Image 1 (cartoon, rainbow, N blue to C red):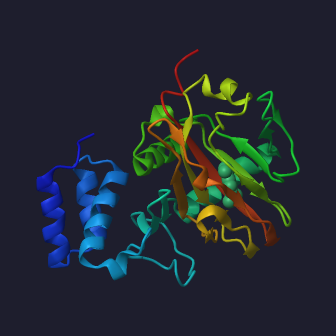
Image 2: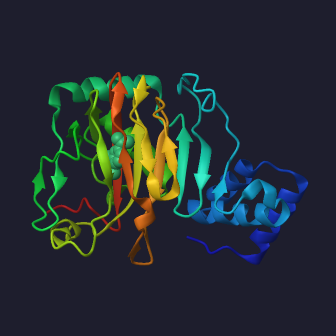
Image 3: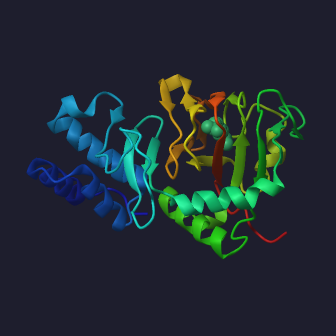
Length: 281
Ligand code: PD2
Ligand code: ZN
C-alpha cells in the first residue's frame, strides 16, 4: 500500500479548496491504492484545516446519497454502495446499499433452516458456550461456499480493503423480540487466557462489518457506548469498525446489539483476521 505523499496531500488540498465533494476525492485515493483509512484521514484532516466547523473533533459526516436519514427503504439493486457516516477514532463507517434487497432476502432464506443457538467464548478456556448475554440464533457460511456467497465475500473484502483470505466465513444472526447481544469486543482480549486458542489460526481479529438484512420495526440498534453511537438497522446497509492497529486492540470499539422491541432482526457479520485464516490444514 502506498504512503501518503506531499504531492497527493497537495492534490487533496487543491480539490477541497475547489469544492470537489469529499466522497469523490476519497474514491480517487482508494482507486489509486491508498488504504481506505488513510484516504479518509487525509481528506478529513484537510477539511479540518479549511472548514473546522464541518469537521468537528472526531466525526466526519460524508454526503448521504440515499434514504438513510429519512429511513426510507432503499432498494440496493443496481446502486453502488456509498458512505453515509464516518467516525475517525475509532474508525467506524456506515455504508449504504452494500447488499441488494434480493441478496438480503436470499441470505435469510438460506439461513433460516440452519439456525442454532449462538455462543460466546469462555474467557478462561476459549470454549464456545451459550450465554445469557447473547440471545440470538445463527449459522455460518464457509468462505466462498457457493457462487452467491463468493460474490458477497469478494465484495465485502473490497469494501473492507482487506485480503479475502483473512476473512472468516459469513455469519448470519437472527434476533427475536427481546433478543440482544450485550456490549463486547469482537477482538480476542489479549489478557484472557482463552484468547490464545482463537488467535492461533489467522491471528487477531482486526475489523468487523455488520450487514443489516432487514428493517427492524423497533429496537435492535447496534451501539458503541464508548463513543455514544447508536445505529438503527437498515436493510442492505452495513456498519464497519476496525480495532487492531500496530499490534494494539482498541477498547473504544466496545459494541453491542440492543434488544429487539418489535419485529425481528437479521444481520450478517464478517470478521477479518490479521493474516490468512483459510490456509489448508
Ligand atoms: O446485532 C448486532 O447489532 C451486533 C452487535 C454487536 C452484532 C455483533 N456485535 C456481532 O456480530 O459481533
Ligand atoms: Zn460484535
